[in-house]
Image 1 (cartoon, rainbow over the protein chains, first blue to last red):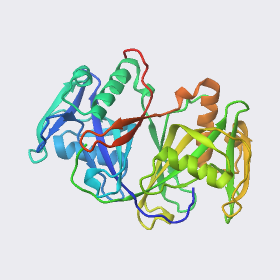
Image 2 (cartoon, rainbow over the protein chains, first blue to last red):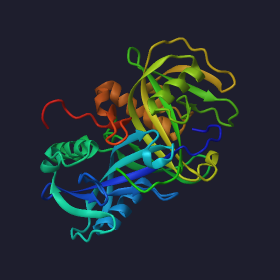
Image 3 (tube, rainbow over the protein chains, first blue to last red):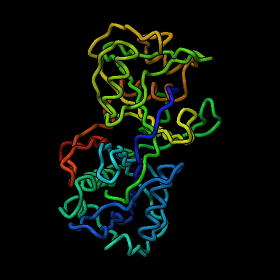
Image 4 (tube, rainbow over the protein chains, first blue to last red):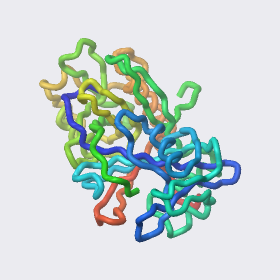
Length: 178
Length: 178
């Protein structure tokens, strides 16, 4: 994994899909200052040095007032010349979170609306973005057949040289010998 | 998906695991200038504006002389304060590739050795890195039970505002209605 020194080329954004398994609802927001009112998952840019899951949990709390915990990574988008990234590239990751609280107290500076919406409805509405719609269908499949079908699980591992830790995401391997 | 403008915090590196399904072998290299001779997948940093899969294919060709094509994304590592990244964070992605040629003509400036190694052997040897070993076990599982169990597939989608395209990676959804 060692390489010649490089430079930062990507900003990293993370969204959190908080799924309430008990009723099949997911937490969605509509941004302020948008021409189209599209439902999307709360999220935002990672702070320097912040882990993916921590960004998702923090952004969900800041935007919606809902406490949650990280479960898995679901999807990754890479986009170049992103309009908001000044010619840099953009890596956007969507995580699955579990709710630790349910009361919505959304940030009126950022959000116009915030609701627990049935996944069935989010998967079918046109009032959403293509990625949100896709992830809603993925989550719906997970809800019906088990989230193990859609999850990338995270494991923290020690780095070989630095003694620091990194986070590795991939499909869960069966516990038994492959 | 729109957010306040940010700045680039991550360098992005990509490795390619070229798997020959006909014999269960995978293409691995040992870096020059290392104290420990560990087998790893060829890879390196993305050029600005370069897609993940394109980086993997290019780096594999440059290091080993083997032509390949992108199949899927397998694993993502996030690491902060990476020694080679000057305090920036590092996103390291491992892709599955299929070989289009088999003859090895490796770059002696970068590699000490380059071989098609049986996945069984790579999954068991201690002469490798923890991530390579983990991904070898993942690939071995895929080889035995179907790569659909371990793959994140890629789809190119049009961006809503810019008219450009982005790449979205997630678990394949069944073709039929979920």
